[in-house]
Image (cartoon, rainbow over all chains, first blue to last red; front, side, top):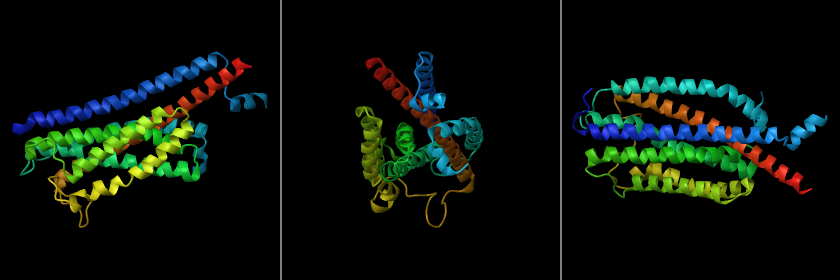
Length: 58
Length: 243
């Protein structure tokens, strides 16, 4: 594939777009890992939400 | 399942967990087809191979505006209907919209340099998109500044509604002012002005970007619901420790 005299700009644009997409995916994945770990930590310490406490007593 | 059931975060989490893998797979497939079509698309008679930048620049611009539109609808949901998931949707969309706007600006500059001879001009289109980017940063800063999510949601909703004025300005800036940026060539009265061989990869890439946004938005909404659960549980723990 011949990208012509402006190949650096085309490759730069696609590289920047790929980097931004990768950062978005990594941010969402890392945030999920962090929240899931925090929830698991709280649950192992026996902390439950009020709605779960109500469900447990009924 | 009635649509109103989605207002329940627990039901939303269950349903989104089932949808997410399919959305992610559809996103990958759309990108594979779009990139294949883009690589094999012919060069433009004036712009040469640099026209390939259009396949990422234009969808990024559409998604930058679509994200703010989602936030505007969600802002109405927060202020008018007090929908429990509205501010979750708005908060999850803001960083994604900000990223797509940054992508639009960066790819636009890299397209502008070889075609216009400059990375940047202060014309109507470029400036209004830069304003959109700054507004995204403002909303993100607001969400971080106010600790209580419901208070932050109301403040962010007001800012989002005010910022929505910029959307028609971006769209019609190329008609209202003399700009270096070309006028609309896809979403215009009289149909697209782009040849089919370049329009097909553009539309497939736009679909891929849309699916990417939906996938990440759904995942980010799930994260936000989990973050609020963590916050509530930590407050309950502190309350119990204080007794």
